[in-house]
Image (cartoon, rainbow, N blue to C red; front, side, top):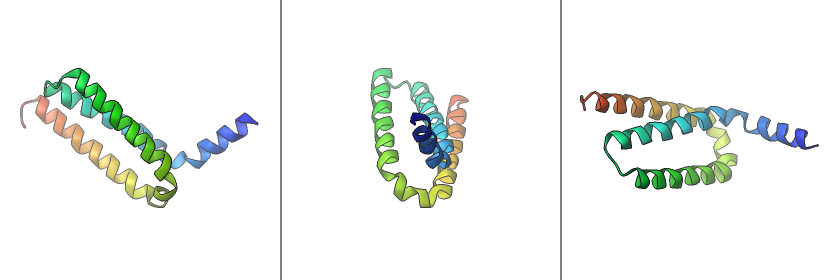
Length: 96
C-alpha cells in the first residue's frame, strides 16, 4: 500500500523533477559565487538554508497553481541557471 502512494506521489510531481534538480544546481552556483566574492561562509550557509526552506514552502503550496505553467517555469529556471553559471565563470576568470 505504501508503494502505491509513493508511486502516485512521484507520478503526480514527475513534471517538476527537472526543476528540483536544477534548483539544487542553482543553489550550488550561488554558493560558488558567494565563495568567489569572499562572503562569510556561515552567513552564506544560513541564507542558503533560508532560501531552501522558502523554495520548499513555495513548492509545497504553490504546486497546484504552478502545474499549469510548468513549461514556462522550467524554461525560466533553466535560463536563470545558465546565466548565473556564465556569470560565475566570468567572475572567476576576472572578466566581470
